[in-house]
Image (spheres, rainbow, N blue to C red):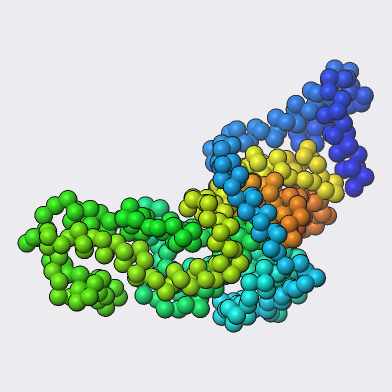
Length: 449
């Protein structure tokens, strides 16, 4: 069976080299069993037929999303990639220091805090090996990616109360007002910094105001609309209209049932047309900085332990966001282009054609889940799929390896190396069902090694 597959793949590979030459022997299409004869067909005829199988379902599927090339923001890449080179220069070699971090999944936030909060910059810039209690796995980078992703989910969980979502059309995270959990905010800064340091995209969209604080850039009134459009619009209204006898505010802000002064003796100062400009200025400063001063300083202190502030000072907020989160949109053309195959598989093997046919039917959320399953992160590096690497910086593009099929066989992922072990399924339906099973259970570590 293996010899037959191998010979067939060799025949398919030869078609690309022999072009318009006549076939030396009859060939049967492995997808539809159409016969190409040596008497009437060329290798190019057969190659074109195979290409049609790869595109016919993509062209007919409404959900297949083709992303324009400029989605990768080459201008941002030109500024970000040199920063990664500078970060590599301050990386602590394995021979000098490395750390084992042991956590339980059920208490990952507390366990991580206890072991990380007191680490020095040198220790944080060394290689981590993550050990999940009760699991027999070796971390060659994949577990570190998973650990960072799980920590982000915990830190930005609304029930934890460290961060809140901005009240605007594009919801992004910024610190909760008057929350003094400084150690956890330091941990958040460390996690974001470590992810940048290791070039691991995170699924945590930060508010532009928080990004400005990380960049040590001054916030202004217009930034307020990125945090809370209602407050922004109310202050705009106040600025442009008379409020005497209409609005009855004083120089305090209510939060969780408690009033906070924005100036001395604020509870006794009524907002009027005469002093509303001062109120708008103080209220803006309170919303953008004063209400979350301790949190911002803690996040920055953790972040700068790993990423020196001067390394990122030239970036815009969009560029820093891109550096932290990677590309949120998955470009299938780029993914497929930067894929390698091993074992019996090649780009023209029928199982690979079925695989991409199924992948092209997935929505972006499902594509992110699939990418998470295979690589340990749901985001694409800033330089696209060509930028996939191991944790030590070695190139590790997405690779699909053939493995033997048996009943109920499922794909297995090696997140350390961005590798997918894909059984040689007997038909497309089996493959589709297997991928659906993996996507439904990937958050449970199903099919991971």
